[in-house]
Length: 115
Image (cartoon, rainbow, N blue to C red; front, side):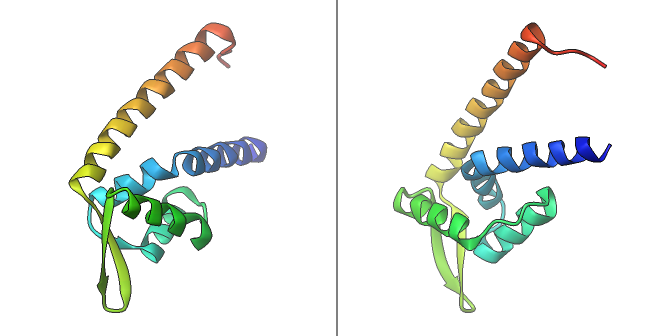
């Protein structure tokens, strides 16, 4: 049982890190957040502790590409998705769902064994 839990955790961590752009844009589509809030929310939801060195370059990339905008609020930089960022998120999430479905179909055909 413990081995299955560890495998599940590793797969979840790999998915979150691979699709961190989609995860963060999804979060910023809601309410504006500052970096620590994003890190804490990901940790709470997925049990993964991101380093600031992983998150802040992504946020800078988003800003440079007009996907998020930032403002200072009480000594913190707060980020929120722009209309362009929300559109990019919708397209990326749609592509992600299609990819997961394709992978699932492949596995069912080529090696899924029900237990």
